[in-house]
Length: 610
Image 1 (cartoon, one colour):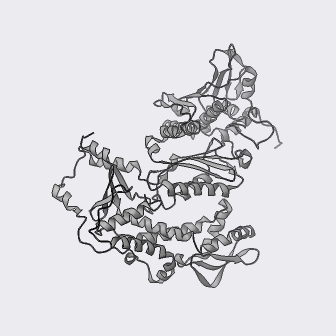
Image 2: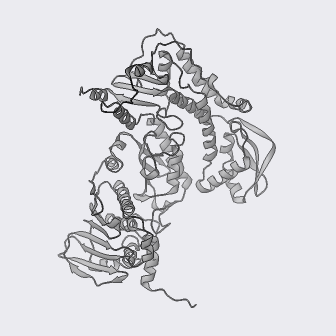
């Protein structure tokens, strides 16, 4: 068949397949145009989940008749000129309006400030009507009806109206977080009105509007800089987590993105602090020279590519971990709320509940017990025990510190309740320590708390001297592409500190001579290939450290104070003091909270005293 030029309408419909995937895609493009036009108020109305109607009204600069005639033609834009190296607007491709007009019924009404009248244009299935005068307020109104009526095949693949409406809501939320100075209103026949008032100067206030008021009380601020790449935002406490990743928002130079590198970095930073199947809450904003990031990866502009991905990933992971070490041991307020709900008078009691059974659960703080020794609880196979000894030394030191504190006389003065975690008053069910603070009480899970203390001590060992390794009797040769071998050898020194000794074995192979002792028997070839894949994608070799930390977490679990052990007051208070001095002690290695705090005002409210 001969080569021929496609009709303009068909070209636009093909482009629309990439730019406009669903009604939410159209809403996103139109909201971006309103923001680029300097709007401070944006109203979004929908019907039928956006299938029947999407109307975007803004108070931006507006357009002239000549602007409007060009705006609905492909590759016409006011946002870039000759280069893609300095993009500072959300839109720049000049494809959104003609793409929407090719698959839907599009009308645009606009008026600039100072103009006596507005102008209007309509495009139906790719056919443009002449621009004509129209009554209009300053700004622009874009109306999209019957999306994909011109491409019925695409219409069949849309989800339910509820699902499509939810996708539009998510778009508005992301834009609202990114631009807190703009007032957003989302309404329509298929939804209740959702309003985000402007919160200039208070970004956390806008985040609370979107993520819920609880986020404000459970957020930690992030502010970091590395080689002219800035990172700001707020992250949730590890114990303030969710069931999916939908509460993670990322922005690059103000642009909402859903980039896998950023999401992976967030997940890696929270490793060993959040339970499996749970996800952290985070709002992160990266700022860097536009020339160092490519936003023209996909027409939807949701993906980006960084010139130095390793730098960006390292910045995110490092900043989050520093913030968690600084404030991550706070107890999430959601735990307190759950405790309050459980204690409310109207809460039904189990049928077999009696006061005697309740009292039987308590053991006096002075009940007989033996001194605590965590080392005797270590349970490992004989084959691996020796290889763990050097690495487990920090665990022993933690135990010795606690044991020394526990051996103090039981007649010593009662600890001061002025400590952050207070003074121990009782032990409940031989697992939960009840401590009194100056303005409330704290309930501590003794096993989870000590497990975290031991793990953090072991983690510190990873940052110090070279870890103990086991020499392979016969080096294992791993065949890899030459470029992957080059990348691995660039990280050879870092890997050697973790006990993995490698060297080049010809142009396309790596010889593994030593592996970390604490991993025991390991599939060296698989480990090397995993590391090569990680370095190739992220330019980091954190996978080995992750494996080591997982083993350390297992060791800490076995080497910590067991549930069901009675503790003396001195033992309990020693544990509390150690928690106060240890970063990240607010949750155990599995991400569960180690303690819950209840304010005196909350207790008084339960008894109607406030």
